Each structure stands twice: as structure tokens, then as C-alpha cells.
Length: 240
Picture 1: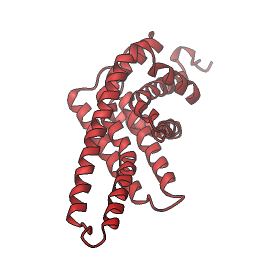
Picture 2: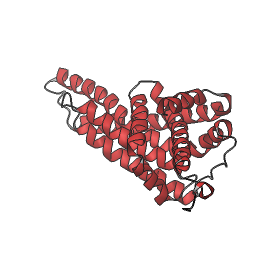
Picture 3: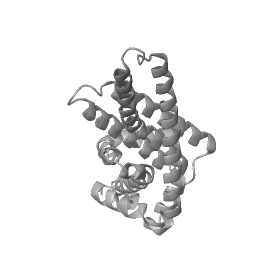
């Protein structure tokens, strides 16, 4: 199921119906990353200026600026899932409408999340992602642990939040969370696919669109599986 869903989502990312949304998503992702970069650069600049040692050891000061620049790239990589969360919350309904209409035309379409609920989801998603990735960033200098923690934490978080965003178009908040818990293994595995994409430079910019499309497929397939396991009343025979 996951292989089929991932293939379908990858195909949808570059499809004609999603092309305009893809460009908008890339533009918003790039703009947010630039803003984060500028903010971090300004923060590091103030810190280094306040602790300058160039008067006595200019070469050390230059080395400090070099390390700060390298650290910015690392910090940006760990903050990318946060940016992805914001972009995903903004474009998920647009992506879901396209995927539902093209790949599941016979099914009733989902409903866009109410504005208040969408804002709540987006803030929760971004906030949790920020906390998780800041915690993972603290483990950056522990070899063998940093990448593993980053991957597992984001696999869980991205799987959980993308799935509940997709399921929220058809279910209540409580029912979406319950369905996710009942299928936690599948949702985590789907989240691992998204987390793996996050770790690939350049391609990780596609995370919001791919993640939304993937979870629409996962939710649809899980819903169909759940329905198929329910025996219709007409097929239940009474005892003679």
C-alpha cells in the first residue's frame, strides 16, 4: 500500500493540475527559508560582534565567522521541517482537492478545514516541529545519534501531522487522531518516507506537496480497508 501511495504521490507532484500549486509552494518555502537565514545571520552577527577577539587574535575571529556560517547551514537543515509544516498547512486543501479529484473521482470530496481549525493545526504542527528539531539539533555533536534522532523524530511528527491534516477533511479532530493511532505503524512508515525526503538537498523543497499528496492516498486506502472489514447487515444470516 505504501509503495503504491508513494508512487502515486510522486507522480502527482509534477502533474499538470498541481503544477501551479507546486510553484507557489516552492516560492513560499524559499521565501521563508530566506527569512530564517537572514534572521539567523543577523543573530549570529550580533553575537560575534559582541564577543570579537580580532584585536588580539584576528585569525581566530575569522575562524569564528567561518564556523558560524557552517553552523547556519546546519541550523537551516534542522529548521526545514518547521518551514515545511507551515507551507503544508497553507496548501494542503488545494493539493488534497486535486488528488481526490484525479485519483479518487468516484468518492465524495473532502471539505476544506475551517479557518480557525486550519490555523490551530498549522500552529500546532509548526510548534511541535520546532521543539522536536531544536531538541535534535542539541544532539548534533553526538555521532551515530544525531541523524537517527532527527530521522525518527521527524518520521513520527511528519507522519502524524500530515495524516491528521488529510484525514481532517473527512473526519472530526478526535476521529482523525483515533484513526491515526489505530494505524500508527502505517502512518509512521509513511512519515519515514517524508522524513527521508526532508534529508535530500533540493528535493526536500518538494516535501509539503509530496507529503500532502502521500497522506491523502494513505488515508483513502486506510478508509477503504476499514470499510471493507465491516460486514453489511444484509450479509449477516440469522440462526435458523
